[in-house]
Every structure is written in structure tokens, then in C-alpha cells.
Image (cartoon, rainbow over all chains, first blue to last red; front, side, top):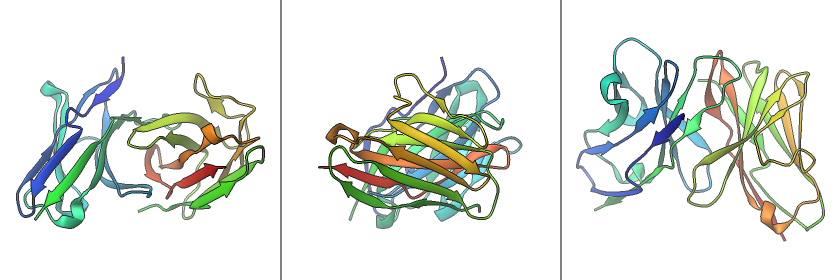
Length: 114
Length: 114
């Protein structure tokens, strides 16, 4: 079955500390992976995506993610968290094929403490 | 990046009335768009795939007659919630593929049925 697992429902990080959000996937075809961020009452903003090539992907707002095929993981990282990073983060997987919707994880809520 | 515009951002309607939500791709053409529903603190659940010039494809359990989808042009898909009831209150989000992959989302519509 195709699925995305985000093991951490809620994470609290001190401002300035590093962050890693975990994402594991199960997908039958070659996966294309995404991380989105959602602020309360807002739509989803694409942070980064991985299709192929370099397994370390750089995104916006200082985020990066590393694709590890052997571990079926696509963890999101940021070296130094800012208070404005507090939001809901979703990992998603899809196929590089028109007409194929993404499968989302349940999301991780990030809180940032001062 | 590509821009997907969704309107309205929020709407309150009386029980029994219908509400139309628009999803536009502003700077690219989208033969396919996706409609999601998101309950509070939950992930996105795919409702239907909107196909330009043909009928939408609904996910299992989604009522076709209640959630009418029309994809009349390559830049516009609409979702009409017919005979809305309080249980239809939710956050609805559309997305459109950028080239061959789904990556960009609208801002979402908060529907409240009273």
C-alpha cells in the first residue's frame, strides 16, 4: 500500500536550535517527494521537492531534505529554527505522471520556544 | 513558481444552500486539478480529480451529487457544495500540476455551514 508516515505529531524546538522532521514512505513506483508547510487557515506552500539527481535537496527558507532510498526516508532539516517557522509540515509522495494526486502524511506540528 | 489562486478564502452559508469555490491556475495551463478536504488538525484527503473537458474522478466515499466539479477551461476548476449541511464545514484546498507533477496549491477555502 502507498503511504507516508510522519512519526512525530508534535515537535517543540528552541529558537536557534536545529530541526529534523522525519518522513518515511511506501510507494510502488519511483517516488517523487515533497515537503509543504501550512500556517493556520492557509494553503500549502511548497518548501522543496525531490525528483532525481542529488539526494540532498535545498529548499526555501533555509530548509533542506535528504532522500535515502535504502531507508525509504525523506527527512526535512533546518540548521537554525526561527520563531516564524512554527507551523504544520506535511510530507507527500507522488508519481511523476500527470493526473496522479499526492499522498500526504498526517503532518507534524512544529512549535518554537524562545 | 507557479501560482494557483483559490476563491473565496472563507465563506459562511446557511444550511441547504449551495456554495461554489473556484480554483485558477494563473500562469500555466492545467488539464488536471485536484480537490482536497482537510479537517482540523488532520491531513489532506483527496476528494476528486478534476479533468478539463471531461467528468471528474471521485474518490471512494465522496458523494458526486453533493460535490459537483466542473473543469471548463485549462485554467479554471470549480467545486460546488450543493445543499450544504453543517457536516460539510471544512477546509477545502485545490491544487494543480506544474508541468507533469502536482506541486502547487491554492490558499484554501474555509467553509462554515450554519
